[in-house]
Image (tube, rainbow, N blue to C red):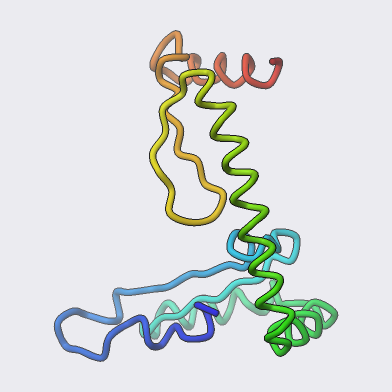
Amino acid sequence: MPFLFLRHIIPDTEDFDKSRVHIVYGLSKDLSLAGLRVGVIYSYNANVLAATSKLARFCGISTPTSWMLISMFSDTEFLNEYLKINRERLGKMFALFSERVNKLGVKCFKSSAGFYYWADMSKFLRSYSERGELELWENLRNS
């Protein structure tokens, strides 16, 4: 899992200031566990770590969630199967969504992972303003 090996992401070199690199990772997107609100922050910056440590007191992970995640991450067979099925389902949903949005003539940027779709909706805006965006949102919501 990517978040288990974060210390290997930041190279041990003096080419840059490691105290200015912060990795924030959540389980929401990669594992489709949005409801759990579990994530990690990895940093060499003492000020960032001190601030997040103080905030962590107010947003700890519940014991049932901790036990479930420990069980899930300890079972590599389950985890491999879960990730395989999750990738397949995300791929199918992305293909279906892309097909329907493409029929509307919406251009998008190619994504490399997860269920992300960076769409160019500019041709549907009546005006390039907050009001124009709100009108577009209302039109999409009511369609």
